Length: 452
Image 1 (cartoon, rainbow, N blue to C red):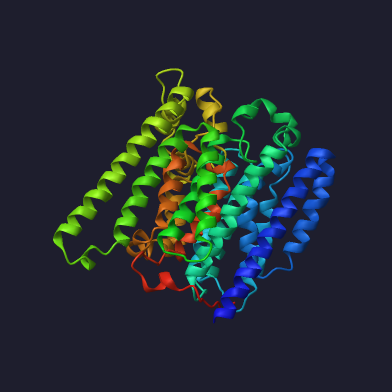
Image 2 (cartoon, rainbow, N blue to C red; image 1 turned 120 degrees about the vertical axis):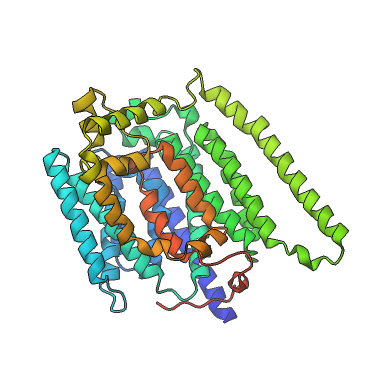
């Protein structure tokens, strides 16, 4: 059993090393030569991806996430993740022990039909509609695949190593090759943040900060579950990510750090068995120390980090930096055309409809509004039915410190659009693995096994 664990750790470290080197070379090619060379490199990357098993395929997709949005080359070309998604879906569906239930196929067909009708009626893009359906199917097959793993703890730990390594590498590459976003997206340079605010290979600072926050949540959850191996390395990476996250100067990031601190303290408190202390005085003293440390940490973060970020980024009284006005415009759109609430306008077609009705062309900058306008109530209901497994173990999920990841995804999604954000599709299926709490017997299971 011990040998099995060591082999798994060794294989995982080799995979991380190979992926890190690959993306460094990929970035060097873009920075030093021409993006056409990058396309050739991408082809080789996908070709190797074909020969990996299902578990490693997901790890590669997870590692690719921080780099994917910036390496689309141009708006006319699809993200490399679309190709990886398709290969992964085919691989999973051809496994004999994994099948989509007939009722889920019906939900998916109905959802596709509603999206097709609304996209056609409101003259939306079929490319966006088909891409969204592919992403939805990817989430479903991920859930089916994850449910077959014997030891879900191992998968979560591996995902922590993979994704935190990817985020750390993307930040390092961004500093080594700071001009990459301008090379890749020459036609959209005006839309990219200034070089002083750039950190990580995601062109939008808010998306980048969301990915950093997710990586931090995964690491903290793993540490809270008392993972013995490489704890010091993970703590160092966590500190590195938190510091570099503030380079985005994102207000969402600053506020999310407070949320992470509060939830971390909550799960850390649950991990302590106060009843093990015989003396009532010791229990009270420990509680007071815990409360004071929490309050002092909160005050420090607010005064030294959050307030300076808000002062730097808020030049007017508009804390939402215009997003509140955009949300109000979409609410007004729903009042003008209430039928949109039923079947939606087609995914990623919302800005076009807003432009037609109100003369304003703006993305929703809110995942929940975007899904409501794009899919309608019927579409959202079908999605909830399709992903019902995610809600089956809500109680156990909330007990798990990995639940911080979901809190952060939901919190940061109030200011982001889903149409440009691949993180949601890749990370949400991990909920199916969140059946481990801080007091679970599975938390000490370092010697794990896995059934392919």
